[in-house]
Length: 187
Image 1 (cartoon, rainbow, N blue to C red):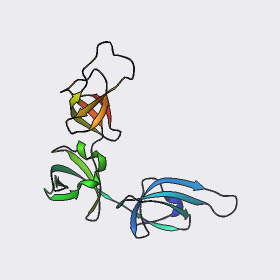
Image 2: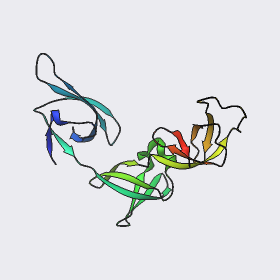
Image 3: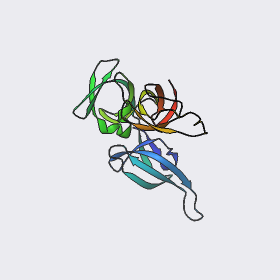
Image 4: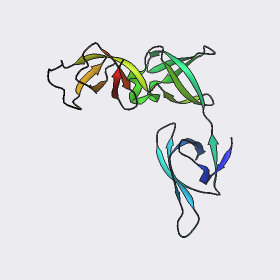
């Protein structure tokens, strides 16, 4: 694996540091009046989510890790495990549903997700940013209620609660932003 200097760290880089895998979240280059320049780096552990602030001088060497990304199709869930299939090799992989966190309800059968691997270990699962859902419960439309930015609560077919515009009714398909948990547009 390539070693890089401490001043070459950029946000998004994955580093092997203190025996763990860390993603650089924020990088701030500091040039104090006295002493050498350094990079103040906020790191997030890819395995357990811990955060760490670390200083790297330009002469410090850190190991940069390249993660392999694979697009895999979601098949089903059983006993808290998500089963994905590699579309090229048809190999099936079981992953913890915790890897998706609060975006788990948006994972639909047959959906293609991008899984990041470090060797054989899956570190993260990302689903498409926009997903089509059906509104299963919402308040009825009230005539004349067309004030700007007036949203009403709704429950989607996957059980997630979001705010939707007043013109969207029950049974309609909408597109939801899975990163912001917001209504995006009608499907």
